[in-house]
Amino acid sequence: MIGETFFHLRSRLDARLRMLATVLRELGADAESQAIVANLSASLHEPFVFVIVGEVNVGKSTFLNALFGQDFSQTGVMPTTDKILFFKYGTEHRTAPITPTLEEVQVPAPFLRDFHIVDTPGTNSIENEHQEITERFVPISDLVIFVFSAMNPWGASAWQFLDKVHRHWMRNVLFVLQQSDLRTPEEMNVIIDYMKQLVRQRYGRDFPIFPVSAKKAYLARSSGIDRETLLRESGFQQLEAHISEIVERNASRLNKLLSSIQLSRQLLSSVHERISALAAQARRAAEVVREMSTERELQVDRTLKKILPALDATRRDYQESCLHIASLAEEALSTRQAFGKRDEEEDPAAPADDPPGGGNRAQTLDHRLFQHLQHRTGDRWRQVGIILEEDSLQYDRFLRTQGRGSLFPPDEKPPTEADPEIRRIFSAHIDSTIRRFVLSLKLDETIAPGLLAARRRARWVPWLAVPALLGTGAAAYFEGWAGGGIALAAGLLLIGGAFLTTQLALQHARNSLVDRLEQSARALHEMLAEQMRVDVEALFGRFLEILNPAREVATEHEEQMLTQLQRLEELMAEFDDIEREIRAVSA
Image 1: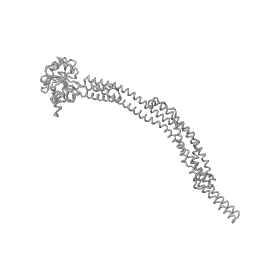
Image 2: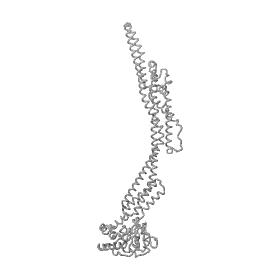
Image 3: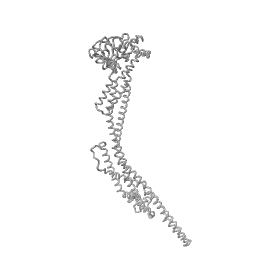
Image 4: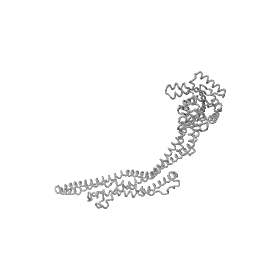
């Protein structure tokens, strides 16, 4: 393909320009910048202009068919006419007059998207046509191809036309000796040597001369028979290589590509600067949100440390309350209670003066422990509630001050008072936790088995007194007073043993109660600590309803900006790569 390297670079640059246009549109660039990129992209596709000069029957049509792979003779693209024909791409074949000597011909040939062909009249010198070509097309042409027939390369019109071409434009001229296959190699060498000598004498310079057989080149491309041989014999490979070099090393086109890159780089730099500022702003916003989130976690720790002494003090109060309850339990576990008359179906731990089935039965050891502990700790936990209110208010103020203008309206004032519900809810939770814990101890059930066992043993004491007395009397009657004394002593020992087992049962119940109270202190400490942690986390967790969405939005925005920056930098690097390749081609 002619100019493959150039068109590859142009295609890559065009793709990057389209990408740049998309980036500018997505990033909200101004309309002027978007229009500049659109114009740059459109200007890249300005076709090359080839002016073809030659008389009738020199094989121009066949030459163009072979050069661009299109059968002009079959499509009627190359009609014989005395007008200048300007060929360009169109979706359908159409001819439109431009001037009396110029017609525009639109042809659906793909190569005409990149190459516009100006065909000169195939007649002898016509002054008007020559003047229009030299004034209108030669200055804008990228290449002027003089097609001569190898059978008669001395046609006057082509040479006369060349005389009118300004010397400045002669650098883009080359000669094609068509139908070279009709001459022997020796004849072609003589003709080429003579043409070189003639050109040097008339114009003081050399022009590239290429002997070709367009017929063989066209057959090589349109048929599948011995294509390589036909193409090699046609001489077109050297001609195409020269034309490709002219296209690929066209200074004005390469400079246009470089200018497009330079202007694109300026637009990219401007956008990159703006997005960098937005990325820095997004990064600062994300950092502010992260700082506020970190401060929330630190505030939770600080608050927990503040109220930790209250937890330790409550544990000490609980231990003292346990001692108080233990002293109260002494009454329930006294000898009087063991030997008192009591129905086993009633609460064995209830005081002897409690009426069966009601009255003070609600005043169990658990309830008494709770009331005693609540009385000692109530004020302390209310003070803790005040601390929570103050810390929550302090962080709320910090949050709204730091987030003014981003998380909150810029004119919003920080709160001046804390929510009074904080103290009430916290106190209720602590009170409920202590209540649930104390009532779960079931102290009365702990001492009930021991008291019940003591009462059962105590019942045997009266019954043992009767046989002891009877045995003493019988012994005294039969054995005398000595025997009676021994029997009495034995009976007393028996009664004393029963009484001792009753005391042991009561003591075991007391020990069970004391052990349970001592072991429960640690459990209460852990339970209250967990409740405090849950309440403090919940208190400051309500700020997460603001922080979490803000953090997600800020992080997403920061990532978007960083992605856009990376995208711009990659696009800049691609422009740099294309520029290096263009400069390598033009070097």
